Length: 155
Image (cartoon, rainbow, N blue to C red; front, side):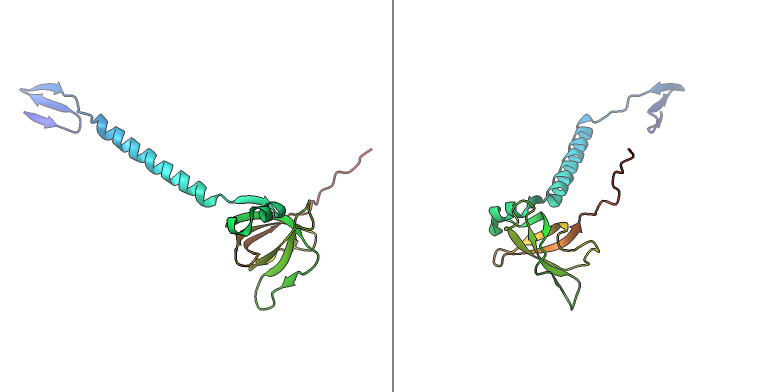
């Protein structure tokens, strides 16, 4: 008797006999389940790590500093109290709510300041709020780009 297991062919007394391969359905089902479990774990952790609240300044103040850990804040740079840091990159400024200009948060940003950063600019800052001192420590500062293209009247 001569057996070639890779092809499922067996020779007996000079005759070629095909044999069925045993497939282990339980093994494949378990492997598929483990794959789906791992993929689900990666998706959930990826979404959880990258999800942050997007709030206006008034919403952040209403939420309270103790409940605000990681967030993106949208607001307008207040024209007063913009302090460029002399010893390093960064800036300290007040971010005011576009709809309620009396509500402000002090922002401390350590990093390269965009060229379009100026008083009255719309910005989004991403970072954390410390509960002890009401200062928002931003690790990302993005400014809204001014529109370079205006609709022209061709009439």
